[in-house]
Length: 129
Image 1 (cartoon, rainbow, N blue to C red):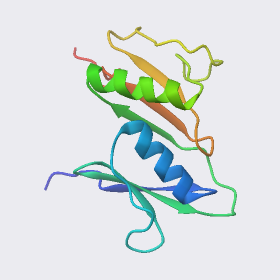
Image 2 (image 1 turned 60 degrees about the horizontal axis):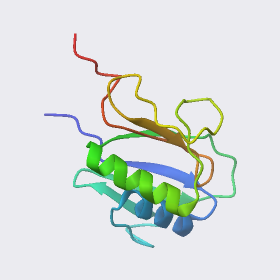
Image 3 (image 1 turned 180 degrees about the vertical axis):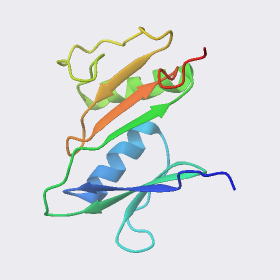
Image 4 (image 1 turned 180 degrees about the horizontal axis):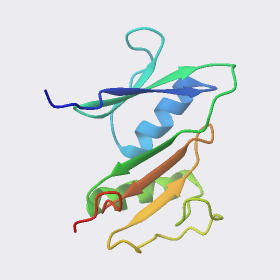
């Protein structure tokens, strides 16, 4: 059997706001409530991010999306339209620049709930040998 990631539960302060914002940025569907108490974002046919509201402390998640260049540009345009700060490096300051270090395009942002979102067109984690 092939192992595939099906869903991730993403803790947040306001699950409807968080799910809606990410879905709008990525240009994918979402729902206020799904099975259980989650607000799911349907990233693609095989991956759902289930936002779940909590008052507890939670760690900051890092999630990276690999997209085609056309989709990258569309998402970047939506980030700019929403006024969301982004940066070219993992831990750097907000520079509103696109990183091209690995032969593709890459950015990071921390919105909503400070989770760290990354978007790239070429995976540096799986470089060809």
